Image (cartoon, rainbow, N blue to C red):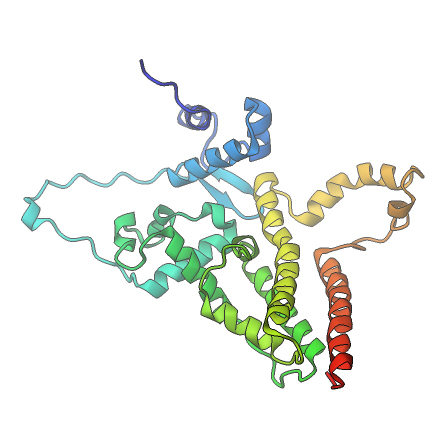
Length: 317
């Protein structure tokens, strides 16, 4: 007995049917993940897989600031007579190299998020088949590791360098913060439980901690990872915002403007005095203000530890 198609596949086929019938024309927005969950009653993970599958099949594409739209149909190539196997022309690399593949991957992930990345999608940037990429990178996992390490290559250390330990840690945290703004997917990708071998990332953390003295190695690495994880966790909002913009077609300012009447009613109700206190203060709380506030408090706590160790040893930090 034939097994029924999985839920995500049935939804993919239903959306493709709308496209094939002309109900959804090239450039039209397709249902967002939120709309899919509501219309078909599936989980967000299933809805995400639907859009990912449609992108991988070349049916839709993500447009920053707009959302996921129906892709233009690809022109049909004229059929060519089949050549004997030994005479078939080999697919050329068309400028492919390990570095160019990594750059193409970065371009896609930076604009649309890591979920939009696939070997097929990168290959399409060069007009070649996915198999052509495997002469330069082993698989998608290796590609993403190379992309992450390449992203850290773009970090420029300050000159002159801060000598004080606190100023050095703050500078290192801000370098990471700026990096995650340029590459919104990167914060989600990095892991403190399953770290990947990325020498350039490790070099930045070494530089960040280089002026902290008087600490044993275990304490020092805990300080380093705590700082890294704070910046990474806060910066995860960059990719969240990118994906929300693609799904809704609204940037943050437009979305906040659409929510203003609802929030105004909450803030002026008197039931939430803490929130009501910021009424009228636009952008009182942003990712950047949260980052800077939390960074200062985190370093205050580090200072208590560093200065306490210095006092115990009778030295000066």
